[in-house]
Image (tube, rainbow, N blue to C red; front, top):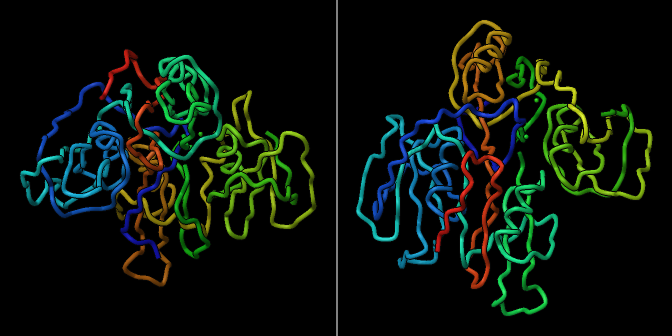
Length: 365
């Protein structure tokens, strides 16, 4: 059954389902301060601003503690601890050198103009090129629709043959749901974001497999991934197989499979977002739940909540009395987040500037 448990999702949602951020926000940061306990999970983050943005987009995070590069207690540099309490305030505030704590910025625009010197974002590469400097690398990332962050190798790097190399990296920008499964008496769906081949499988050439609620949802995920050339959706387990093969596409008949192409150069059909999915459960990522009479009211409530991206409604005739008529409002992190952050001499890392209203990069040594 649906649990009030939150898992961190470095996942993504359609632009029309994006969170609405106002121009004003409280950016209070408490240097050399720890908020001990109350942890949800930790993730890697290059600096406290990025950690604060991750907390902002996490469905349950209300405050955080970031372990800076100057921390000397152990090797937990760049750890971002996401935290929450029922009151919304930390239970304890403890002075701690090398830590910075702060609060969720639910009303802030997730623009990340900083450049991080001697920092590497290992993994998540999908393309590389040689550029004259890290500014040109950042411009290349900003202009590439698939790039969310990058790492540039400076001239002083040990391995001469990869100096000046600009690594473009990908992070999801549409909804990935941690668990999708069949369950009676529940209805799930989304808030108000090609060509499909039913009963068709495209075997092999798998790039990555993620969860999707429908073939149309899978198509949107393929459209968002810079290397996806086609996909196959498996209805019995909700697997969305994103595939890469620019030379050929070989079809095979198969019941329970739907394949298709990404919508790269036209507006995709987003009518699937409005469809209520009977006997489908979107587990985890809960913001909260409310009691209401039907799935339509649940969807409307999700539409009206700026933080809600998708929902699950439990019908009144379920055998689990405790969960009857519950409307679970849900949300996933959508901002770029590197899979890891490490110290590397003569490397420069940063993020694309497409989300920035003012784009003068701020250098972080």
